[in-house]
Image (cartoon, rainbow, N blue to C red; front, side, top):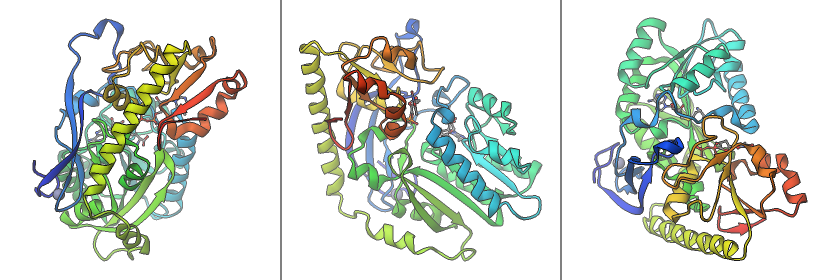
Length: 400
Ligand code: SAH
Ligand code: TYD
Ligand code: ZN
């Protein structure tokens, strides 16, 4: 298998078997003929980019009914407001600045930019999310960002001082086209800022549920630097952030335009070069699967009620890789309207509104949205007061 970034040789290290599209929540009448593909990941021996073996047509994942909404978490609303405020105070403080966001979803970040009266454009192919952003006063183009889209934006709006993209660039297999588009659209002194899950944290926490269709790439400082250089740009700074279980914000600019921060070399030097870490990771993931299934089967046999909390895209990997279905988890509670009343992809577990959680409380709740543990546990304090306990599986199976 050839690297999608540099054409080097990719060595596969983890096969997660047949998997559905992680955000394709099914209507109960549509459980037949579900689309499945084989989820396998490997690492490029040249540029070290971790990537999937199979590409899914993009319109199968991102379309009018794509249910994910960034604003579903108070923590993330706060995070993105801070991102916007920082851009307003720095990169967007000049004359008539312009910012483009790739994967603007429901406008969680651009809302603050729009309220400040700054020229902006969100690009997102998911029509329902785009509609929600337009309702917040965000200007949005319902489209996939690539070289062609960038050309259209450039001709209409001119160059961008900031191109920002959170939790989206890693979703895009055709990054050659995206980077050619960024190169066209970015102003001479502009910045391209990317935030995405960090491979280092995924390996350290054995968070193998971060591997699913949308996360086509798992980024590291080493692989992003190689990617950026290949397209004539420079990785000028990184920040390691706690959101989504460990994220890096990469600041990319034209060569020589910014001083390269010391964190880039420091974190890069800490990254593994020995491929045995990937095999160890796959072994630990298999151990976690066995431990989790054994625990859930034991609790069921003892007559305990276990339900799920947070019908995340990540949960598709856990449920389908572990073979967990409604016999072990009868339902999952989730606050996203577009997921409620539907079945989880592949595993066909009903998704119910959070109000069902207390009706009555289960004995245990398996927390699939473990990256939002603090927010959810604070909201659901009464569960513990009723004797309930949370089951976690990151960084290993444990009960809290
Ligand atoms: N930025 C938000 C949304 C992340 S979800 C956040 O961090 O919470 C990923 C989003 O990327 C989805 O809304 C999806 O529709 C969008 N997306 C996928 N491919 C894209 C592309 N080529 N161009 C622009 N957006 C894309
Ligand atoms: P998230 O972990 O952000 O992403 P992904 O789908 O990429 O794995 O998803 C969080 C899910 O948890 C989302 O479906 C909304 C749900 N949720 C709740 O039900 N209640 C909450 O309080 C929060 C914060 C999230
Ligand atoms: Zn490569």
